[in-house]
Length: 41
Image (cartoon, rainbow, N blue to C red; front, side, top):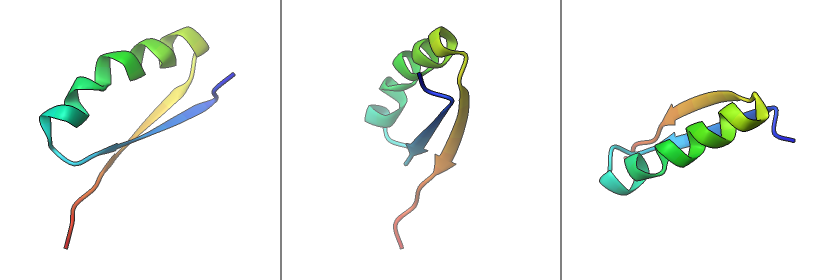
């Protein structure tokens, strides 16, 4: 279903808490995961 999953991370705890769920989804669908560090200027 999902070939690629893009994950925006900003260094917050809330963003980090989403990682286990994202990795489970990626494993279930054999998806490629791309992490993007997001910063505010």
